[in-house]
Length: 465
Image (cartoon, rainbow, N blue to C red; front, side):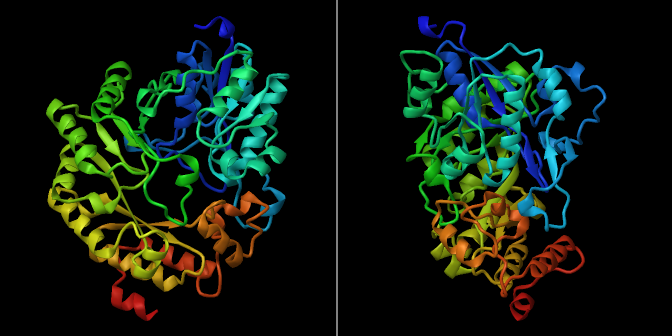
């Protein structure tokens, strides 16, 4: 421990969510936990307040609360309470909620915490900023005078808005490196910032701060080589860095042995890029050691890399939740949005996964609905292609992301003020509806998709609609 950081403590905070719907799809503040681990390694005391996780505090504070339902592999619901809608959303005919630990319970929990020298709070979706603002206001009331620094996705994509509306003392945009670490050191009265090593030298994220741990999120790579027009990855990470396969294996074994964790969700944006140098040796080692854990890919796998060898290793290595990022079957849209996949590659990947042992229902395929200028027929034809390949289509409503090339198109197509109000980025609003793809069209497609067993799409019938 360096002399100037003695007794300095930092409270990491994962804020409440305000939304019409939210679900714990292996959702932990991984970036915040990495920062906490780096600061702890530098000699600071680090604590965690995860406002979303009922199990993150001492159990005596939540005995009267009915625990939210959990599903297999660690997924599940958040605790939720109905709250008034923001003025901007008052005409939306849906119930608005706060997701996470009720304020009165959180207040009792915080009374047991030592007073920190600095609060470091993260942010995720841009349209969740009202939950973030409520959390910061709550922290001000219960820890008056403690400075609050805000980082994360919203802080990076909507920096000016965050400075005006979040209530934080300092907005730290961009990846957690260099300048941001220097600013944190200034707040803590330190003459030097924590040593900034390469990603491969970072300590394991501070998941040990959770009293109970149902799953762990893994990051084997930072960044993505693609430049999809709807994605903010290039703004959230600079370049691409990888950890060695052996480092990843050692982390999996660490959490399995120390905390009994068997479910791991990959947060990578580019897990399968250069498979021979990354995922192939990683999975061969998993299989050789008989690790016996379950792996999940909520961020989607790149389809191009799934040849017969990779598909077989994924299956034998214990990947239980497979998500593929097709986005659309329209070849023109594929090229215009980044060209990371085509339909032949997609069909080949599905065939390889099925030959490896996966059933069609186990292969989930993300399809985006509501892209600027997209027609409903494009989504119907995409659903048909996925079904006819024998996989499971999963509709994902498009969310406009500031700073992306497609955001400029979205502003022209949306009836909402996307530029000035992040609440309108919420994909639940179907923000880019127009004559060629109305809200009613989307609801109809969703209902038809729910009845897969009764009436299946076909490419020919979808094209006629």
